[in-house]
Image (cartoon, rainbow, N blue to C red; front, side, top):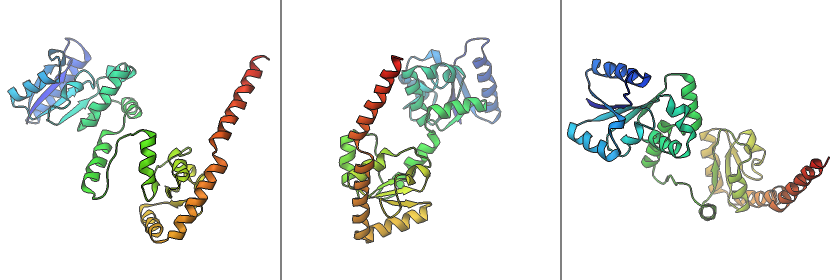
Length: 266
């Protein structure tokens, strides 16, 4: 395979040494590896022209921002090797952070040299491999659509036209989506975890499931039992209006702030 390897190749730097070492590994495996300095290219368009001219099939970039951003949208598969400053410095700059997240979404793999670097990356961005797997499965599944973020008003309009709202989180504090569904009179199917079961009482304000098989069983039951649907919708609406009133919440916060005002004068 003909590979492009992008790195920052300033002499006598750690990145340059690492790039040479990794190139040796790739060439020892029988690949043709063209090592280029990321600073030799101004933008992805120049990289695209180079890829075509050299008939390159894939790429690797050392440094998520400096190298990775140049490979986006060029039509060849690529992987990323974290450099260090990308996770230690660039991650703290908003624009660069956003770009690096997009690069990871497109990358086929990402290499971290230490567990701490891996953990830093995981804290910052969604697992790109998992994201691709979800998107691929959605494309293969009839009747399932993956929808991007939308304004709350639009989301509520969509929810009102749904048969049920499903919460499959592995952990929750208090799910706003569940409370919104109840207020909109939409049945709730939620994973039986502490945060959800604190809000959803099984067969009273919603339905709780513990595994995929139970979810399927309860979903079919909800479809075939209009009386159950009517009961949990009514109870869910009443629960929200009784225990999650925004007027009472507003008043509570006002009172709490007043205690701060009183304490500041002590």
